[in-house]
Amino acid sequence: MEENQATLDTLKDIKSLMERSSRFISLSGLSGVFSGTLALIGAYLAHWKTNQGPWIQRAQDTDFGTGEIVSIDWSVVWFLSIDALLVFILSMFVGYYFSRQKALRKGQPLWGTYSKQFLINLSLPLVTGGIFCMILFYHGLIGLIAPASLVFYGLALLNGGKFSFEEISYLGMSEIALGLAGLVFKGQGLLFWAIGFGVLHIVYGILMYIRHDR
Image 1 (tube, rainbow, N blue to C red):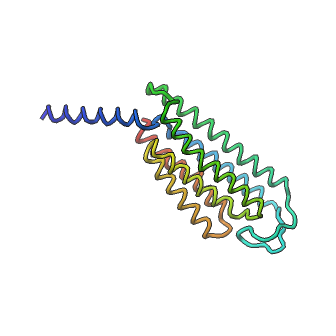
Image 2 (cartoon, one colour):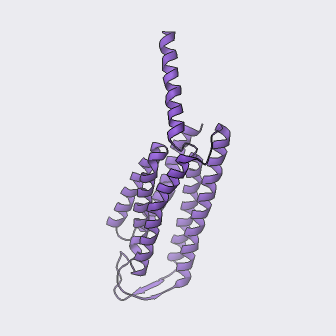
Image 3 (cartoon, rainbow, N blue to C red):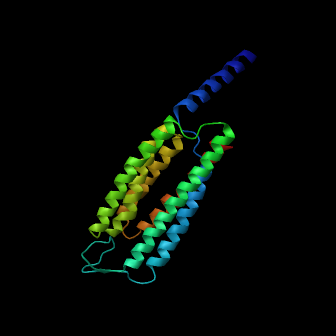
């Protein structure tokens, strides 16, 4: 009986070593929790700003943000852009900070082959999605930007998830589903954006912390 237990322990150690050598496992669940909180704050500020009054006038207004734009309040556009940029920068900072702390605590390298692969595979769909969203804005399809950002972000997580924890891939699939739902329910893009970047990040961050960080 003791020999069987020793064999099981050995197999667990081998599995752990294989995981350490083939995946980026320094990613911290706490970074997801704080990033989600920042996203909720950013979504609230965006909702507050866009509900102060009409900031886009169209020849034919629709719930989906289509129709020729007659005039636009660029102060609102700049506010939303800075809001989104600050959320992104602060999320990157907390992601780096908590992942670095986890790597130091566990004696693991933060920057290595698989962390590079993770970031490269993550960045390609993100850059493509960013360009796509700017094209949507150029054509006046503003109501599609938030759902589209969720879809491309989900694709990025799905693409990079194979180099990290499996929860990253599941989060990616959830983001894609939310983005597609946002395309169906017209005029609710910001709500789905808040759920995807805010609530889901917090939920999956807590799960990752419980399973991998403690």
